Length: 310
Length: 271
Image (cartoon, rainbow over the protein chains, first blue to last red):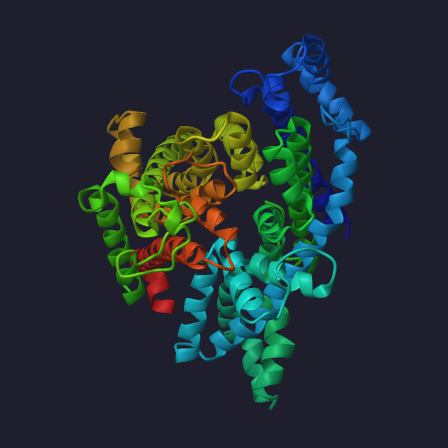
């Protein structure tokens, strides 16, 4: 246990330089704008006073390092700036949209697991059968169909042709189904392959032979014994992929008008040229991603004590 | 090579042909020619993929879209591979503090950051254009190659023939380029194939978000975005570009997977 705490602390410390770099980079993003960021945000028809006010509000009158430091201070206070036109707080907007994104990512994680475990196990136990072959093609299809293509296709089939589910929007469980499948499809494909190879590897172990020898049903051997060990590597992938789900949510939310952080970034931030909002959203998503990865690493070690922090 | 990889290779060859020959068979004017009276026309014999909201021929735009997709993907993979190989080789070959900075700091930062988000943020600030798109995708693409190369160099560096080359007085550059690189090329090719799939996807994603190629140049991702508004009355506008993206990515994934199996005898026996 002491080793575990030491490991976990070490892993936590590893995240520090990453977060430092990410926040600093985000604070300087504004300088990528070719030309004048104030004019980009507010347009050409503004009075010199308005211009000056916005210029100062973005700290552009200060040297580069100070801009970064000021942004940092804001982040630590929970203040990510505000909209130059309306004065709405960026942090408030992000907090109000955050739950919807988490809801969507967790739902798609569930979709992925529900598809991947049975499919992966069947694929492994019926190796080289037609079933295995179909499963691997389906898995590759899932990886290759981007969510912005799958989303509209699912809408077309289930909402337009069969009118089973709402096209888009937020609120009920029915609204969640299509976005969750869209976002979870790629992950379920990756997971299926993971589960398959992991189960295949475990099937060669001695304890499987023992379990079979004492007369357990094949079903029991697989689901009680093999899966328990076989799922350990899957957990890491799950954690790493949760971060990728977050990035994928940006597009899925745009497709389905899902009121999460991704849509906030694309529609309110990028399309309305709200610089501080873009910075805030990028920051929020990245920091969540970093923390989820860190947690997974720690949980992974707790599950399998053989693994040491490299 | 397994049959799926061969299918992948055939599809890729076909796509490259389409991209190269598109201007020969379809005039450039046809891509942008508008006919608002035939807006959203369903597929017909003359226009097998139908027309979009401006009455432009979808087939012509799909064919020209292949040019953009392939061009961006090839350039991104070449530049990323070059940068990644150089940085990865330096890191693996010299080790010590250089490796410390590159592998435990730089790799860590880039890998613990969702790549596509970085690309979205960069292009959002730089402004949408092909060049900015390529820059953003290279910035997120090189890490995969660098990490792979570093691992390869660490492995190959210990082989006897490298020691022999060093004993004979070979310079660092000579050892890396003449001995280590040729022995690391196979996994790099696999990575490049999978990287092509990733680049096609990322280009389409960014174009879909309005952060890719500006009008009137056709891109599959942007065509999908246009089609989204007409899902009810003109589904062909979503179906064709969606299928093209899927087929392309699938082909590169098939090829990458097949190559990996083919080049690695250990895996060949297992599966």
